[in-house]
Length: 520
Image: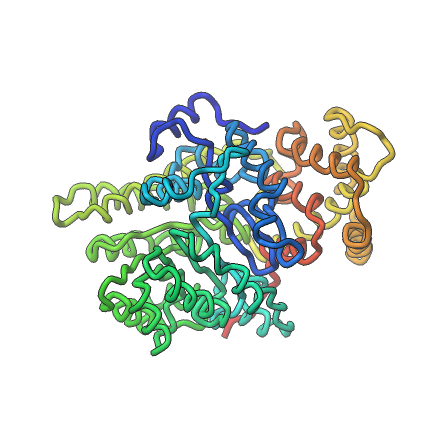
C-alpha cells in the first residue's frame, strides 16, 4: 500500500473542499477519461490502473468492471499504489492543487437534484452514470510543442516522417455514448487540438441536442476560430481553456512551435466576447518558461482569468524536477517575489480568480522547494538528472533494457515472488547496467518482451505476479537505484511491465524520452 504520512494526510484533509470524510480521490467513482488508444482511465494521470479498453469492452462493462472496482477500493482505503503516485507525491510535498483536487471540486459543484436522481451504486459507491466524461480522442494537431510527442500531436508525427495514429473512436462510439451524455453533468475535451477532430464535433452536436445545459470545457491551443466553432460555443457556452505557456512572443513561439502568439491572444478575445462563454488559461510549468510565469500570472490576474498549471514531468529535460539547484533557486526567488507583489494588492485589483491563481503558484512553489532539497541528497559522482535530449535517449535505452529484464523476472519459475527475492533479482539486473550492451541487443530483448506481452494470454497466477511486481516496485528499497538510473518514477517502471499493450508502451517511451526534433 502507498498511503500519505499522518501529517500529510491531516494537511490534505484540512485543505479539501467537501470535508475530510472522502476517498483519497473521487475520480474512479465519478469519471471516465478516454485516451487516444482506446484506454479508459479514471483521470489523465493514472495510466497504470485502467478502467477498461474500448472497443474491446462496451462502456457499461468498463464502468462497472473489476478493474474500476479495484481502484475504487484502493482509494477508499487511502491507498495511492494503483497508479496514483504523482498525486501522492504532490500532496506529500504540500501541493494540494494536484489533479485529484479537481475531482473534489467537481463533486461539490454537482447539483443536489442530480445526486438525488442518481444515487450511488451500493456495490462500490460509484455513480450510476459517470458525472464527468473526459475526451482525449484524437491526436490531430497543428502544432509541434517542444514538450509534446507524436503520440499526442499528428503534426509531430508528420514532422518525424511517421504515419498518423489510427483513430479508435467513430460513429459507433458516439452512438454508444449517447445515454452517458444524457446523464453527464460535466464534459471536458482535450487533444491534440479538439477543434480539429470530427469525433469531438459529433459529441458536441449530440450534447447540443440532449444535454445543452451540462458544463463543457474545451482545452484548445487557441489557434482556431471559425464559424463552426463559434456556433458550438454560442449554444453550449463552454469554458474555453487556452493553453498559453509564455507571455512574450519569443517565449510563446519557441515552446508552442507553429503558433502565432498575437493570433492566439486575439482568438482568446473572440471567445471572451461570446455571451456566457468563460475563458481560462492553462500553463505547462517547466524549465523553459519559469521566467515567463510571473507575467502570465499578472496578465491573468489583471483580466480576472483563472490560471491552471500542469507541472511537466516528462520529457525530463523539460521537467522542473530535473532542474539544477541554481535553476530551482532562481525560480523560487522569482515566484516568491511575485507572490509578495500580488498578495499586496487590494480588491478589486486582486479578484477571487487572482487569489486562486496565487494559491496555485504557492502549490508549485512548495513542490519546487522539495525538488531543491532533493538536489542536496544526490549520490556524488552519479548523474541523476537528464539535462539534454541526448542524455534522455541514453536513459531510454537503459529503460528498455531494464524493462526486458523485469519482464523475464516476472516469468521466472518461482512460485512466489517475495519482496526479498525480487530485490535480490533486481539488484543483479541493475548491476548489469555497468556493462555496455549493444543497442541492437537491447532492442532485440525489448522486442521479445513486447512479443511475449502481445502474443499470449496470462493465466491468473501470472496476473497476480504482475500486481505484486507493481506493489513491490512502489515500496522496494532498490527503487531509488532504479530512479537514479532511469529517471522514471517507480509506478511508470511497473506500468511498463504490467501494461500488455505495445502501443501504450511505445507511447510512454516517446513521452518520457522524445526523439530529437529540428524545429524551423
